[in-house]
Image (tube, rainbow over all chains, first blue to last red; front, side, top):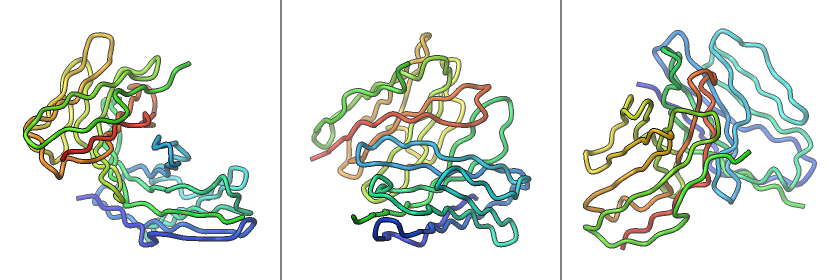
Length: 118
Length: 113
């Protein structure tokens, strides 16, 4: 069975600080996909990134960066120079390999509530 | 270009009643998935519809059922409501060529009293 653990329930930082959100996953699949989604107070989950299990390169997108380490089953997310607008709940998610062109179900972690104070 | 739209946004029901939630997928998407998100938890997969058939199902009882229409829109039905069914119900759409990236709606907040 797949499992995603986000041990940090809540994090509070002051604006311009860097913050890292941790994600640890469990799966028996050799091919799988990892995701991060952001959920602002409006409720709509916003897609941030998707990585497959064969691509361990770190990725940077503006102030966001992701560190995927297969050896430790972790897919951590760092926000550099945080801003008040980054305040939201962030979810890490896992899905098995895509087949038949069909999007597989996502297994989500319990989320990390990030609060960025001005 | 409208994203995923869900209705109603909020509703209140009493135990034992039945509820129907509706979802219109993003333009160009043909697959609809439903997730239940309890307060303070991550979303949990209920089921997925493609070509008007249920293709995948999570660990939810038969009280939860769904339907997909020829225009790809979908309904989620929950019968014999329990207090524990109170949650945010999220609809997500995707395309079979869309590399497994789901587009979510803002959800329907169901309160069961």
